[in-house]
Image 1 (cartoon, rainbow over the protein chains, first blue to last red):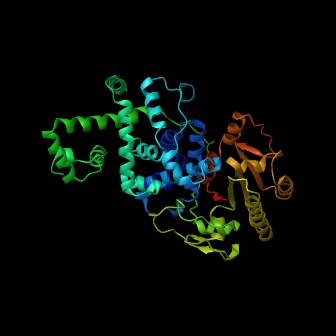
Image 2: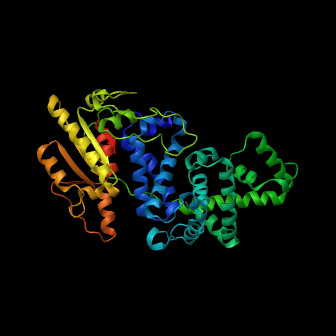
Image 3: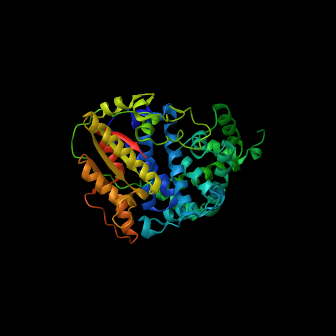
Length: 184
Length: 252
């Protein structure tokens, strides 16, 4: 199916919006670990996409385009918080809130441990890693979405994975992941 | 890439992510056949990738409310320049705003002419209003006094124009995030203007986003809306519903 039809074509809009909401929400949550904020970011992203859909000329770019809008919505949110004078420096400095069982309903220890490890990654690394691993964006799509060179995508990805490898891949954790996978 | 130990971290990651071409992938596979340490590295990298996925596999948004069942009309596709001309606002740059590699915009610059002269890709304002049967949904998401004032000016101009020419018109204003302040009795910057607009134009409706209200209340903020303001499940829900019905969607 033409990707553009999924969001902007002849199918009912609601169906198209619902098609993209889970992916956008998952990524938004992995960036901020705050369900309410993720909800707001996704709503803002889809509203912007709907208002600008006539501007999308290249359907191949739809996925990257949507995540680019999400990225801008997230950056706008951080600007509103006035956490940092130079928003670009956040890529190297900004850990997210720490997830907890109370706010994310996760019960599996491994899930919390993975989220905690990702939460302490610098924002730039966290964004690249989650776009590649959760939504399988190509490196080129990630570069488009985050407005960074592909070389930066690759180096941030490697640094993120090295940190996660260090934090997560002892034998006990690996066994939990394998067990978790076998249950689904 | 003669020796496995020289394979960079980037190359190994790209291999795990399926980002290499066939020749590069084949070369790594060949190395892996002869190097157990490389095999272990790749296996561990795949494990980390699987862990990241497992960490968010169950993360899903709450479902949005279902619309009551009117049959959808054709969706009006309107260029950004036309939207800007409609309410006299400046159109944004192509999405995303700071994107370096984006394709060329459909309309590079919003026309600054009066509404009646706005001719852009996709047709004229009259065409757009005709296609939407005079139904326009205006979305306000920020609370800046000047911007909101300009939006209200644009809305009134649209209503006046329709009134003068005898054309049917319906305008809904949906407000969310910071824009909801416009509709809050205790903080609105334009309460009298909204009251007078509502009195003069029964075809004008103001709607607040239920999701934004819920968020404010969760944070301990009391929300009191201006008289006559309705509440939708969410701004997204309302926009999707109206687009589905063929309304023209304009974002401030």
